[in-house]
Length: 116
Image 1 (cartoon, rainbow, N blue to C red):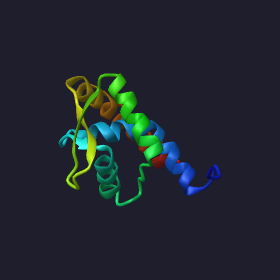
Image 2: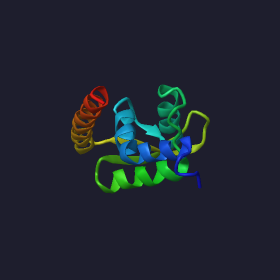
Image 3: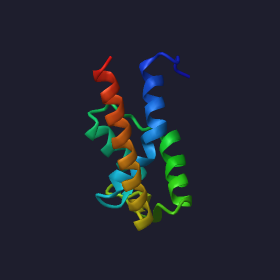
Image 4: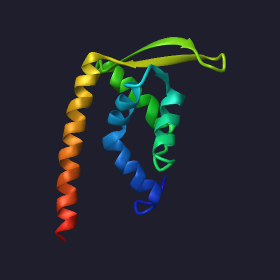
């Protein structure tokens, strides 16, 4: 377990509040399997955000239970069997709410940082 002041620990704290939003946003592009979701987020974040399997798959299960994503088995580009996840209409509405909330919080944090 990383120390609470290590960069890895700080990264984990950030992801706890944003992983669902990042996964839902990624799935707006097209249905994807878990590994592709993680790779997409890592690539776009320029490897600042690393999504571990131990965080990703429980998040996907949680999103599926809430009805925000669905899944079905398919074949990956490498020929392996993979579960593909798709965002639902409910998931898109939830993503919109999460993005609006994130924007409000980000703006509030920026205002505080500019005034201190």
